[in-house]
Length: 350
Ligand code: FAD
Image (tube, rainbow, N blue to C red; front, side, top):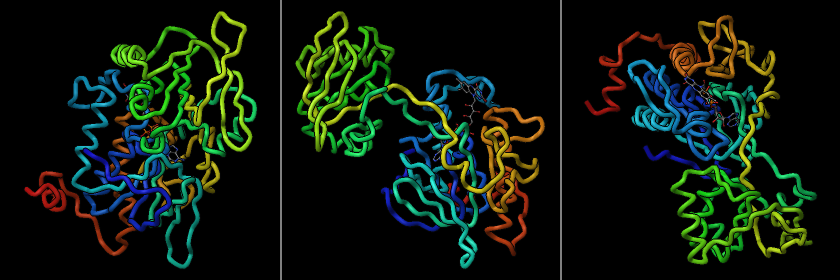
């Protein structure tokens, strides 16, 4: 499914906001959708799937009922297909950063770090282990160049890199994928890695060497030592392996791809109770210490909790029944199997 992705900085109103588009957040769209509850999802990653797509897209999973074996990415793709009838709106590459209760409208206002504002009656935190934060290289003045937009940890719009002199640093999948994809549109692309051994998929590594042969990629085996330039980045100093002489590489932008760590981030300041970085919930509604804020998946805790996708799916089903109370306070839920759910039949056109 092609996700419907909204522009950064826009304003929206919906029934429920799901923070985290991991497997559990995605399945929540389905369970909420069955009850006619519309959703927007916010995720700091550029793509849905959470840990499954970011950490182990090709690893097999054996404990999803009725799927004897499925890879992390296949599971995400199937969930995206399953929720398509409910038209969820995705705000990707954005961190849920501020949550405020609006007394006048009896609703929540969620802001992202990209100034997107979403208003909803219900918040569902499906933030897993927290947000994935890029690991930064230990370079002096790195914040200065980040603020100038000369250091970037993700490629949000390929167009922004057209005709730029780009340095990519790293040797994993992200570094090699972007080297291969940006080389044809860049003015110049240099890949800097500390050893001649790459951890990326062999096919991408061989594509990178082909582009190097064609003169579209410069490969430097070494480490970035310094970023230089007054009002913007002008060049970097690289120490090549086995040499004491620094090489100067002129560039407009550096993309360090050194992996990601997980941090709880701004959710910790949303005013709900936390215990050991997890959100305590009850096991009937999965509601937090704050009414109409729910927590499902790896982020929550209750006696007997298992951090499994399967458990998160169960939590999403029960949470949705409870969320219904806030969206449709005057309506009773009539329990239905999906085969007889009129709302699903209508969406599926059957
Ligand atoms: P996540 O998958 O962690 O997704 C949370 C999402 O929230 C992330 O995309 C994150 O970017 C986003 N987020 C967090 N904070 C914010 C914020 N402030 N703003 C915006 N976005 C935010 N489980 C199994 O059941 N079977 C297995 O075989 C299995 N194998 C695993 C193998 C490995 C190597 C790992 C690491 C885990 C494995 N797991 C397995 C565990 C499983 O991946 C997790 O239980 C599952 O991913 C939890 O889903 P989730 O949706 O709760 O959280």
